[in-house]
Image (cartoon, rainbow, N blue to C red; front, side, top):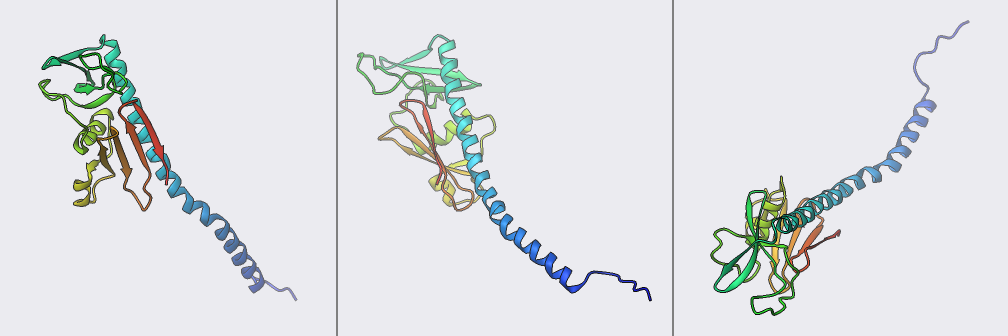
Length: 191
């Protein structure tokens, strides 16, 4: 008598379920880790683009033979980078006194060449990111971010140390990068 068997036996089904379960247990942590790695790569990319914008603005200033504006007897560095006027840092004031800054790094937008900002502000940090990057993510001050969920980054100024800190708002991580205006350095911190 010929037995015509169709389908799988119970033992075969159990073995397949166990194997698939083991594969899922081994692969699931890898898939969960991909999201965090993507967020890290995202902020590293944005920070890299920001650093490139900072250096490109400085290079434009050098290429234009270090243009400046004189306001009230003080000489301030400025440059038009990609259609936007920026105030830049200066290493010496008009009295040849050291300012503790390196020359030529973006400080703030130069809206009318009549007044140089005395200190860095949250709004100036937002404007720097919006204008140094070609396609910036949505960035806002802490006040703006608190009232809307549409922002990808918050910007906060540290006027005492002349820093702009940009914090990634996606997910529960607080990856950030800091723009040190005195030196033009951009540093990423992954949390």
